[in-house]
Length: 252
Image (cartoon, rainbow, N blue to C red; front, side, top):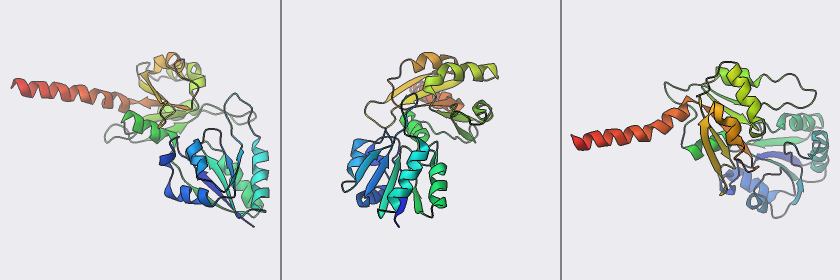
């Protein structure tokens, strides 16, 4: 009986993979990977057979039950099986369904964390998602809910948080903006939309909550997250403040 590794591939750039993840990929015999995993990351699994089981919003996707079965079957034939997920496996990656399937089948598994899109986007912006005296809690949410799932009140979490990161939200920009404003979030709340974080084709679009639908039209179809909160305003204001202070000191 083999072992299944649920590995985080990170937000895009292959050099953000953890050392443990890279070592496991080199030993892998079979890799089931998401659509957005970087080719250089997949290239580390030189010995492995690679099987695409990706899910993209609005496109044909591999059924989760089928993925679960393939992982169990693979572990009965191969020593090292990798389920390679974009970002971190435990954030919006449906990892728990795979974990439950492996446990039911008695298959040994290990989870290898990865850099998630939220922190990668914050790094691209040069903005800390938390900040002393301003942002003490962060919400990671997605407005998307599968057919038959219970109601997803994602907006309540956004409204309660100092900083919010909305995954898979670019395609629902109009609904997100309308819902949050209708429930009391100020239209002028600073916002950034970060697409393809850490990759050469990254896009960073800045504005306010009211601007979100227009900003989303400027994306190119890559994976994007929406960041919302006063930390964005404070960070963007600081360089201006520093310039003003420097000018005052020179005049003095």
